[in-house]
Image 1: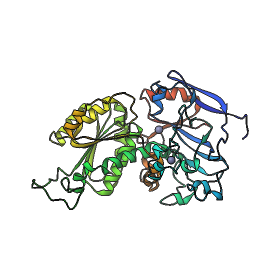
Image 2: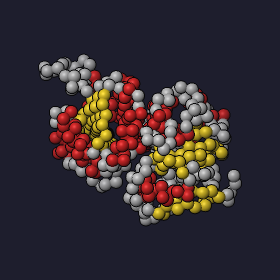
Image 3: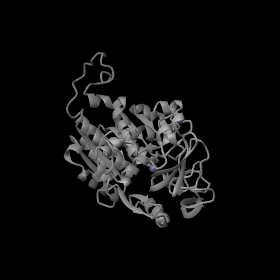
Image 4: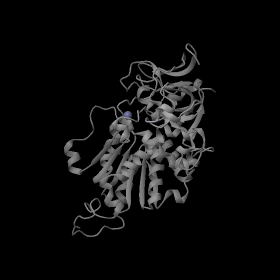
Length: 426
Ligand SMILES: [Zn+2]
Ligand SMILES: [Zn+2]
């Protein structure tokens, strides 16, 4: 690779709904911390649609996409044995290594990174945005690659040995949607408000073992059956459901989950995914996929009108937050990983006060979540869902070429297809 070489890339043009495949220069190393990755597969994501629709406040033409897997073809001068005191990959990454990247870069060295809050790294930049060219191209430049990339060629990075038989299309889910699902489920189950249900102890005993017990009646079996609603059953919603089921099955905690979506095609996909999960993976509970109206009725019945313990919102729209507020119980939690564009939230401070609702908002620190996401892929537990393409229960609907890019954006935007992957070399 040298200066002046051209490659194919999927480009966004303002103001909206304009996707073109163009020849653009192959990226070069610009900074000592950079790596250049030859992209093997790149996915289309719901978050790409914000810019596609012209909602992102973006005007600059740029290469799309923030989910990619590929092979390192060039490294900056920061890499080598002299980089021992820096994040691991600066001293171990080699040209030829297979890598997957989270959807934002992170330095691995600032305080946010040291805490594992990699989504809010001081150097955080989103791929496929005006600030950084995306992965729907044949090559991509990855800044801070020694902390950002995950080395799939290094067996030590895998909790359960080398994953030689894992499909690349399933490994690509590590770029965003699987860690985001794991993050949403983890935030939900770790929240202090959910602990009385999970520990079977009333507040504040559930958090503080030495506090005095209350004089209330004891918790019933129904009280400690965790009830959760997941709003949005697109690819991230499915990953959230799969992750939540996995965590609850591991705890053997009784539960009831409602997955909510406006589109029957998405509800149907969710049902097929759930049907593909074996009894052990489902744990001690039940799961239904339904419309918002059905969700209100079902949860009303299940909880005698009290409401859910937690709602996970993965849509990024005020109508979804309004529904979340309606479904959650007093002293419940709403975990939101959707990208919100509206200037105002759809509730008042008084409404939040009156229900003692807790909120968790924000972007998944995907790089920090990788090991947990690997657990799901690496144990081969969910290859039935993540490993196949185009089957009823597959998360990925199709792998296509750049010639189909514009049509793929259109169909994905309309909800006519699920997850789409591009092979830039097809
Ligand atoms: Zn994404
Ligand atoms: Zn950082």
